[in-house]
Length: 362
Image 1 (spheres, one colour):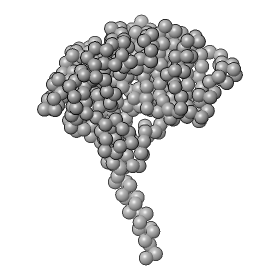
Image 2 (cartoon, helix red, strand yellow):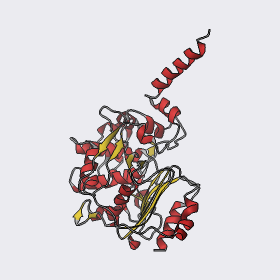
Image 3 (cartoon, helix red, strand yellow):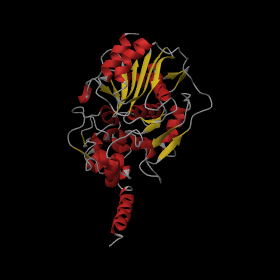
Image 4 (cartoon, one colour):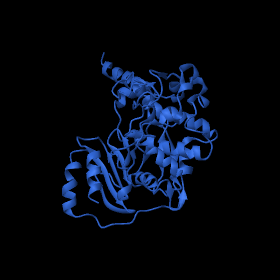
């Protein structure tokens, strides 16, 4: 038949269209996390305020500084690189057609943002304590043994959750959470593989369960609305943002990832914690929460280098948020310094080592 190729193409288009609405289809079409993913998923808009905070302008560094850092940018898929010290932009460069207005997904840096929101909710009494069991907010998980899992366990990645973090596995839990369209149902099916509080295991299921806890604690607000109210507007972000959700109708924010924003605004998340939760005289989140979130601690199976969804590069007081494609918000309080690197890929670079080395030079 002459029309066989046309018929085949038509069937293929229909098939791909139907697949794109389900997890498996999304996985095979999109295959892996990408900096354009914010365009692929539905999201909630997060508005900024008319009062915008801007960092002090600074004469761009010399060609010599650029030549030192150049090897870390050209072949390593870096999109943005900023160094801010004492509220002054010391270095700012963009690559591959990106600039200060370009949106880049946070990926797992959202875990750290969610941690701040949990702190705000505790400050307001919406959540009573990190020692509360998960089942106080998600009672349907009682039959799965989650009455032994506390919010603290989720924050420290010591819940004992059975969760496959492999992004290349279409049947793994992380694929269900990232590409699926019903996070609440996926959470209800989560199981434990070991006793909570035994040891550290980095899996994205923990912050997503915390996201559902926060949603239920908020009751009449979405997580995006709370984010806008507690952080985005008070911090004087330069641009609006968005948070990807699992589906358009009654969606739940992907709280293990997927805050979509600009580099300069990600810097302000770091500035908030650099200043111990205080923003220009207003305490946004309690100083004690910031301290607990970034201290070295190994109790209850916790890893010293990871606390309350923040990574600790050294034991010298620095901390950072990190995303899978090499997204970083690095904060060094002793140097009053923040570094943000956003990437298309992680690249073959020890970014943490570079940040620590750069900080030592200031």
